[in-house]
Amino acid sequence: MEPELHPDLEPLAFLLGDWEGAGVGGYPTIESFRFGQEISFSHIGKPYLIYTSRTWRLDEEGNLADPLARETGYWRAHPGGKVELVLAHPTGIAEIYVGQAAFNRVELITDVVARTETAKDYTAGKRLYGLIGEDLGYAYDMAAEGQGLQSHLSAQLKRVS
Image (cartoon, rainbow, N blue to C red; front, side, top):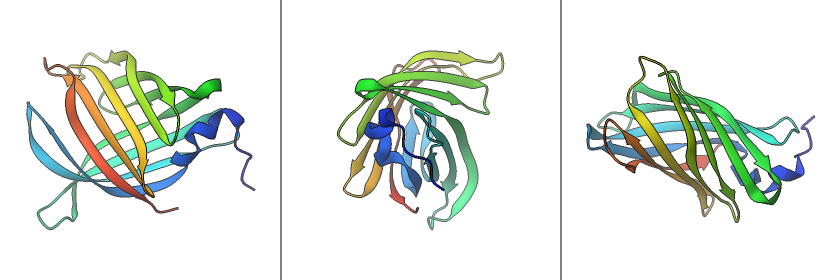
């Protein structure tokens, strides 16, 4: 039996489900690349979404190749569409984002970034998620490796469940 959606999650309800698709990435310190991605958003009736994401590099023919990034976390919803996102990465980085959700769109910016001693230099991020027709689109800007906040990833994903 599916739990009832917590009322504070209503502005984030458009995210629920499993999504798959492709995107492009780049940054001044790396070569541009194409990637495939799976994202999942679920809930258990509490005022948060459970989130996982994994990506793979795409080869010349568009087939999944080497694994790239993974992240997992919780999208915490508050009255009035306020959102806190708590993320953990296996690369030794943890982030807390704050933002706002409204009209099938969420915009978030880092409030806190914590890194382990061996993690790469990463200082800030900004994320925008929203529906493009029936698809989920997003853009991710980051500040890392001595660079200021700038475009890093964007993708368009289709709902698969």
